Picture 1 (tube, rainbow, N blue to C red):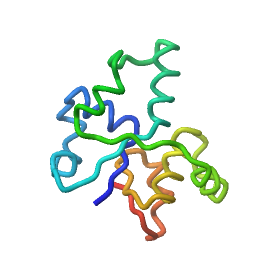
Picture 2 (picture 1 turned 45 degrees about the vertical axis):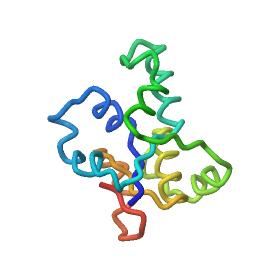
Picture 3 (picture 1 turned 30 degrees about the vertical axis):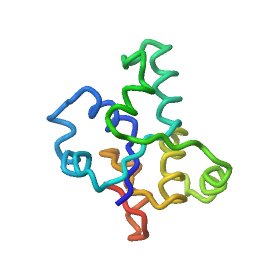
Picture 4 (picture 1 turned 90 degrees about the vertical axis):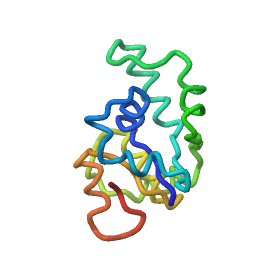
Length: 128
């Protein structure tokens, strides 16, 4: 299976926050799963970090790679998918993650109820 991590799920996984990462632990530790992190999350983290709104490892790129997660880039096809999304959620980073998941066939791992509404229609890919 292919999974894309929401930014908060990524940060919980990197900080080993077992309380919050619990629902996703089996997915993240299954070596047969392809788990990806979007550069969109890196962008979001960099902005929030520069504003003093969160802390993250200074070597985030290598820390993510050491976990076995893979990076995916933002592509024009993701922007085209973004244009099709209904205005359910206003956060541009979350909307880009939804567009990437839908475009590339990922299941998006997120606890965000606004994001989950994009997947309530029963279409694939799903979100957890």
